[in-house]
Image (cartoon, rainbow, N blue to C red):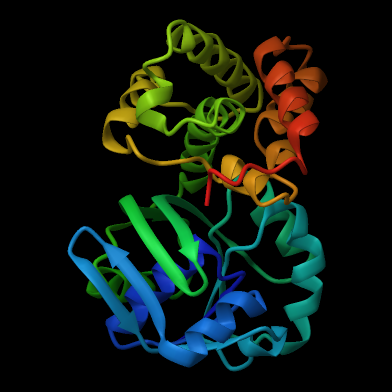
Length: 301
């Protein structure tokens, strides 16, 4: 199967590397800094098992998606429409497009731009890019994808690549569950500059997360979304499974890039306002991250 990864940051590079190792023909579309390194020596994949250079194709051009049977769309939420319009002319008529993004409204927004179905996928993985063309895996890697005509074939490919995959018609609910986790950790990790394990050791943080999760659950229910009854337990337990993970929001701030806060805590804030639900914790975290955007922190890579 021919696979293109649009927006090959840490998540896209990780899954692209696994699929290439499993025999898929993979093309990564990403930033020149990473593309140049990958073209020169392959993509350096670092996991608990060690490091290896994975050979695959890489380009900075949107035309890299041309001819792909499967497109993993991994761009930042704020770039969804712009990048969607860029790749639209190059997509094969029967290509399956999977949104591997944070947030819950990206599949709908991308579908509107492409005028074709987009499959929602909840991705549970902790990764980072410690250097050009170098992806590091910190934990997990399973995905929940919505059903589509070739979902069984794609799930089989993922399984061969070592990616636990569930096909579910409740993928949107799964995306909301992931959104709540991201709302709990991303902004707090960015503001405190702490990895998840140390973050949960800060006195009072568990109480902040408890209030935040309650706000998110109220907004989810008002939106007709089913949330796992033990979502708070899941949130608080995550730090133990990913103690060294720094949130993507923290990584964005460290590099002076815009974060996805508007599509995480900011999304809950605006959905809450529309439903008449107060979300003061999400409001405060959104405001604090926006104040920090562009500042950077050389201590986080």
